[in-house]
Each structure stands twice: as C-alpha cells, then as structure tokens.
Image (cartoon, rainbow, N blue to C red; front, top):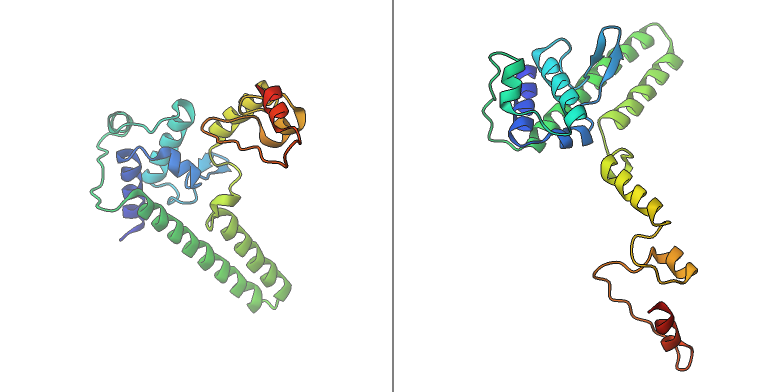
Length: 207
C-alpha cells in the first residue's frame, strides 16, 4: 500500500467515524511550524492529504467537531472517501508505524554519516535524539499524555474551584472534606468504630 493510500484511508475513516477528537488525542495532528505555515509529520509533505488534515484540524480547533463529507467536498473539489473495511485505530497504527520507520531510517543514515566521518560522539547524540523523539512523538503511553481530555479536565477543575475543592456534598468537617472531596453520588458510606466512640454523634453532625 502506498503512503498516499494510508493517509487518505485514515482521513476517510476519521470523517466516516467522526474521529477527529481521537486523532487529536493520539497526536496524529501533531504539526511543526515552517516559514510558510505548518506541516504535519505524520503526512507526506506537500501532499493533498496534508492539506486535508490541516483543514480538518483547523475546523476541529474552531468548531470542536469533525468536518462532514459535504464540508470537505465544498472546500476540496473531487474529494471522495476511500473504501475501507478497517477501523480507525488500524489506520492510526499504520500512520504511526510508517512515521517510526521513516524516523529510524533517517536517524540511521545520519549516524552512518557521522561514523564514516569518525564523529562517534555526534553519532551517539544523533541516536539518542532519535530515540527520544520517537518515544515522545510515536510511542505514546496514554497514562503519560498530559494533554488528553483537556476540555473535560478544565471543566472538572473549574467545578472544583467553584466548590472550594469539593466534588460532592460537604460533610461539614474540614479534614473529611479535604480527604474525600465530599459525599458523592451513589456512594455507600459506612462508619465503623468501637462502641461508645461517637459514631451517632458524627452522623448527626454530618446530617
């Protein structure tokens, strides 16, 4: 399968499955600034696919939704969805694997040039930079991605800020509120202690 096929198939499946939010989460819309604007390293430079993903990213950034097929065809005459029986994640993996292959190939070529020139230290630094870049840009661990679900995290932060850190009904006892965030929906709270230690008094105080 050609590079163009992978890219257009991924774009088609993003549109078909309303997957722009997932593409952004997976950092497949990662872009780098150039003197002429931006380019997207997961897509072939100067290709129609890169122009398509740039439009889709800007559309999502403004409206928080995946552009429809009608919208794409309005701005890109002759655009049609590619046929595919594979899910969106498959095409994301294909883009990621190809990007990794290209980055490794480029790094190996540079390391070879440095070694031929007897610049062992430069070769080592080139290799380290390549591994670091691949880990940061391609091998993504979801529990390490700080910018996933940004909108919902901001919303949760604003709610907690408004309620002084609480996410449920306050106990009315500062240490408990601070430790638990308050009484939250569907919780079953059981108070256990030795007899005559104030369990009922605590319950009455909370009530």
